[in-house]
Amino acid sequence: MTLKIVSTSEAPAAIGPYAQAVRTGNLLYTSGQIPLTPAGELVLGTIQEQTHQVLTNLKAVLAAEGADLRNVIKTTVFLKDMNQFAEFNEVYASYFGTHTPARSTVEVARLPKDVLVEIELIAAISVETVRN
Image (tube, rainbow, N blue to C red; front, top):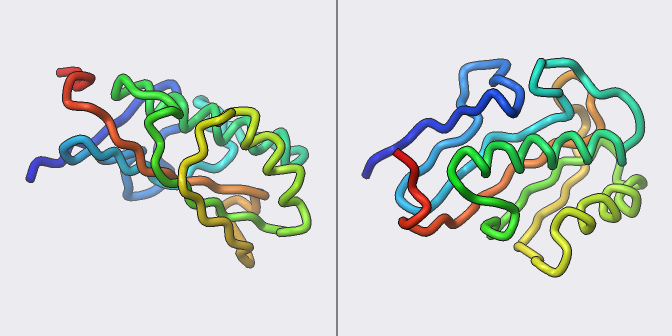
């Protein structure tokens, strides 16, 4: 088994001892993304604004491996407040459209930097899209 560490300057650098994503074979596993800009600035604001930034970051990580949101097979969503689920879900749905990967959504007591949302995902990428 070969592991490839995935990194892109189009998403925020890891703020700890982890990779933005790891690829093994045709599977890409991202670390949780929070609403940081690629420059590392925290996006404050509503759940909608933070969700937009998180999904923009995830799209950038996917693009680094020649993939996009259509390749996503599973997402895990961490929300600070489940009462904001409807607002979150509206933004989430606008990114995924008719593509509906499996998803888990849980409310958590606290997220890094006290953000409102964190998302991680798993994507299946065909061998033909491998970039060396």
